[in-house]
Each structure stands twice: as C-alpha cells, then as structure tokens.
Length: 179
Image (cartoon, rainbow, N blue to C red; front, top):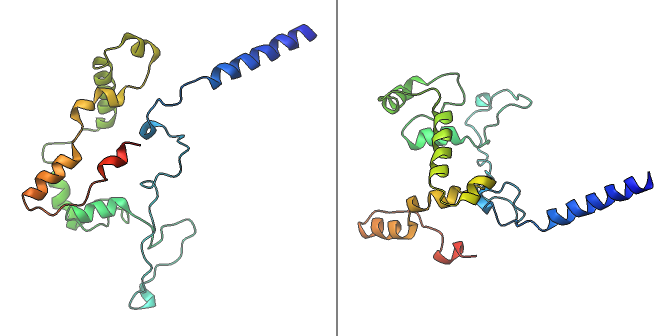
C-alpha cells in the first residue's frame, strides 16, 4: 500500500515537472484566451454617456436584467455607420427603414451555413499551408504563419491614403508591435 502511494506521488511530481517545462509562447497572445498581461482594451466597451430626455415620459419602464439606454449596442452602431437606423436590437426583425440596406447586402444571395463552411475552409487552408510535418502531427496552431502573406502593411496603407488627401484615423506607433 505504501509503495503504491509512493509511486503515485512520484508520478504526480513528474507530471507537474513536465507541465512546468512547457513553452507558453505558443499560441500567440491574440489567440491565447488566458493571457496574463492585463485586460484586453478592445474587449471593454464603456457605457454611453447619460442623457436626460426632454420629458420623463420618454423613459422606458425599468426591466430587471433588461437593456439600459446607456448600454453599448455594437450591432446598432454598425448599422448606423452603414447608413441604417440602428434599431436592430430593439425589435424582432429588420426595421422598415433598413430594408434597402439589408436587401443590398443580400443581393447576391445568402448562405445559411456560412460560418461552418468558412471554419472548415480556414482549417483546410491552414493545414495546406503548413509545411512542417511535426506541426501537423502535433496539431499546433499555425494561424498566423498560414496567413502571413495576407497581412496588411498598416503604415504603408496609412501613408498611401494620406498622400491622396483622405482623412484617416491613426495607426499604432511602428514600435508598439515590437515588444
């Protein structure tokens, strides 16, 4: 009994020792959901500013657990940026004012299983563009390696658009990505 407990203890210590030796640099930080360097500043959406309506009759009834007027609504913000009304999350369907926008985006048809199809095509692309046999056998994530030739040179694009006189938002400093 004592020998069996000793063998179990040695096995546990060996497993912990091997786990401590692992390389934590892969997957890259963008693909690592357990990054320990702090919060993701793009994952935090600040609330909209408080505003007082013209009359208190315009205030909706409070609903516990419901939406708040100051809650961020990224889908509505995207619809407004594309020229819609931004009322997609309040109703059950497409608002009448946004019918033309939705019709235009679906003019070439839609596909119900597009997410599953894109996920399988992406997986196949990464498998085909992974030249190392060991990475295939060990099922290592090669997302960034497979798509590196499609990366956008953000500073080059920024300079090109600004040279044409187009007002553009700024890009991160060139040395910010070289941490």
